[in-house]
Amino acid sequence: SKILYNNQIIGRKNMIDIEDRGYQFGDGIYEVIGVYNGTPLMLDDHMERLARSAKEVRLTLPSTINELKNKLVQLVAANDLNEGIIYMQITRGTAARWHEFPKNEVPPVTIAYTRAEERMTAVEDQGAAAVLAEDIRWLRCDIKTLNLLPNVLAKQKAVEHQAIEAILHRGNTVTEASASNVFIVKNGELYTHPANNFILNGITRKKVLQLSKGLNLKVNETTYSVDDLLKADEVFITATKLDIVPILKIDDQIIGFGVPGEITKQILQAFRSLYERDNPN
Ligand code: PMP
Image (tube, rainbow, N blue to C red; front, side, top):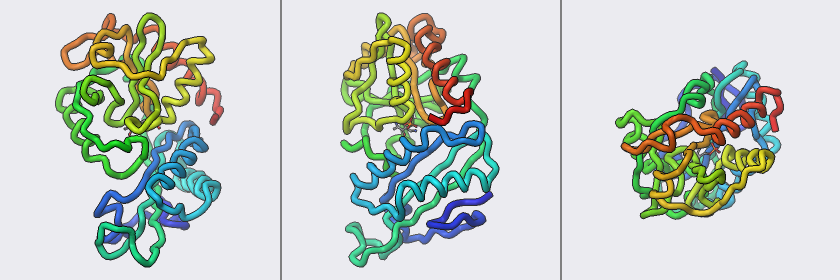
């Protein structure tokens, strides 16, 4: 398969230096973009978020957002990808290992590759279990950086409990999950943590907010407690390519009736129509 390496689309081989700052410090940013029917979904939103992440960690992007976008579209075509994801990361480049930024500016290292993946239709329709885990991350979870060790540990806990996700809480407040955002439904209204420094502002989350408006569903971007989560009528998670997955059980607690809820199903249906109609926006 082909990869994007800085400005070129070339064959995949080992070309990352041991002193790449991404490798040594997690000093870089990334995006994961879903590809449906050969088309990257919500690419503009992902690129906008990438630019924001870059700005927040003071990393200068190697080219304009439009150039990066074009390269990603070229990469999808070069790999003939129909269903799957694009992974893209940009690090602060390669330099002698000192924590501070390199003195003489070095060019960032950009890589992107694609991975074919089946749609998660079955789990979206049937739902899955989750576990709870303390949110031990730093205070800038809004930046999509390469530092994912707390997320890795939380997800591993989930997998060891036959669960799809670890839902994170800071003290009593539910933030998000290890690699997805969390919504609850109570008395016909949706609740999700506000998009501040404690969560990643998911592109799927943003789309669900839009779709909910269209469905005349009230969404409250407010914090809610672990108790609210466990007593919710419905719970679902959102993320790229996972789309919307109903959560039917959290630790030992059955959520609602233990089956995917009506509001969750409505939103899932609306989300699917975005790419089933081949509409990339
Ligand atoms: N929160 C975290 C911590 C994530 O890593 C992700 C992405 N996997 C999300 C939320 C969901 O974001 P998106 O919908 O943009 O994929």
